[in-house]
Image 1 (cartoon, rainbow, N blue to C red):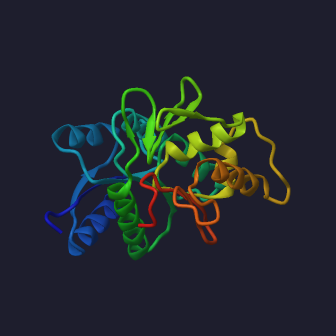
Image 2: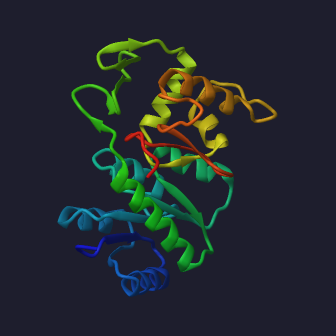
Amino acid sequence: MDRQERILVVDDDPELRKLLSDYLTDVGFTGALAADGVQMRRVLERAAPDAIVMDLMLPGTDGLALTREVRAGSNVPILMLSARGEEIDRVVGLEVGADDYLPKPFSPRELLARLRALLRRSQSAAVAPRGTGLVFGPYRLDPDARRLLRNGAEVELSSAEFDLLKVFAERPGRVLSRDVLLDLLKGYERDPFDRTVDIRVARLRRRIEPDPANPVFIRTVRGEGYLFSPRGDRS
């Protein structure tokens, strides 16, 4: 590692902040601490962190609103913490821009594993805005015009296929479960046997993958869901 990666911990519990700061330092990171949104903004003004660990329940502005705020100007990985374990909290957190969700109580080793995974995905993510749209491989996705171009030629997609691709392309490197995908695809009915997403993914792969049987853009993560790899590789 050429430099120590910097992790910003935003939590109003001083004991937890110190615990995480000490642990992250011990395993080779540098830590920055904030008890609320005001302190978080001050830290961000000084230097951008490599990742943020954010509590959902904070005094003043809560973690969801702060995540939206960060996302307005940065793609820094965000790991959200919460003592509330309901699925709706996890889904909403991911929807507003968090990259992963860890319920309290948790072990520092699990947090470390999640952080390292987020940092790896962040470093390998290659979807980049160029003019209008999102670029990956030979494709350019234009959300405003609802068009997908491959080397300048339009690729025909159904409305459902376009919506699914947009969800993936806006969240490169994240593992998205079927339930999360259905929540992000507002307006679509749920299938009681949970095959709706699998069918849509299969159709989309036939549109964009060089070999749909061995996908490189929309990869299956066994037991977890799907991951969009914008470089079109298996790293």
